[in-house]
Amino acid sequence: MKIIQTENYQDMSNHAANMILDRVKTANNITLGLATGGTPPKKLYDLLVKEYNDRSVSYRHVTSFNLDEYIGLAKENKNSYYYYMYNYFFQYIDIPKEQIYLPDGLHDNPSVACQQYDQSILKNGGIDVQLLGLGENGHIGFNEPGSSFDEKTHIVELADSTREANARFFDDITEVPTKAITMGGISTIMKSKEIIMLVSGENKKEAFSTFLSTDVTNHFPASILKEHPNVTIIVDQDALGEE
Ligand code: GLP
Image (cartoon, rainbow, N blue to C red; front, side, top):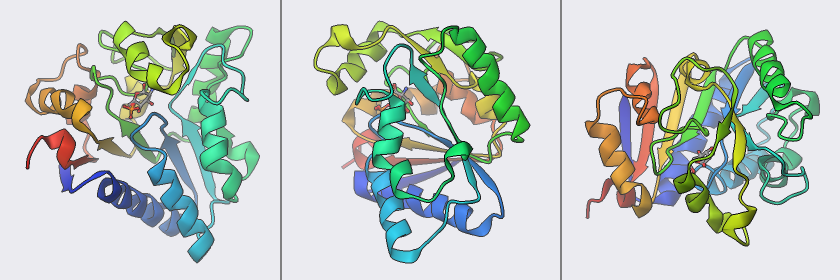
């Protein structure tokens, strides 16, 4: 596991953007696992869009699978991850629409949506580079503490602490969905060839310190990354808690 310490959110985002651009530019075909939440976006996607505009990196050979999606939010709801990804990233780049996948949080039968998502990932040959944020309670994607490491894409009941943490994006906590679909769970994420996890901000200090000190346990889902052979963690000073 490689840990890159950066000065701040901007530096962390620059590092991550450079890593992703490097992979996208050198591959003939590449599958990215993309994340939402406050940490990876929006700066990271801004940088990728800027680079796209400045230097004409192409995304025509890229397939993307997003990590997670709330159940029950319309695509045009600004808090749906679909809206986020299109609004901040996909609409600006040349990735073909049919190569973009997000879990379908509006499917009549969310269990079927989960199975279909896994089939699409499998058919595509898995994820090459998976981007992750670290949840305050140690979640990755929406794999909450207690999730089995063996689960595939599945429906989750969001932890109260996750709903509280994400309420900042909504007008009111009552609007935060109680359920979501998350990739993986962790078994699919762990099959990615490379994982990049971003950790930023004082509110992640405790989670990052737990991440470093804990043994692998499903009570702190991100701890499983310690068993992956190719993980880079990019962390900023606020999350490290150092001067
Ligand atoms: C959120 C999202 C994840 C995200 C993680 C960290 O709840 N489901 O995709 O990576 O938790 O989020 P944030 O960066 O906003 O703290």
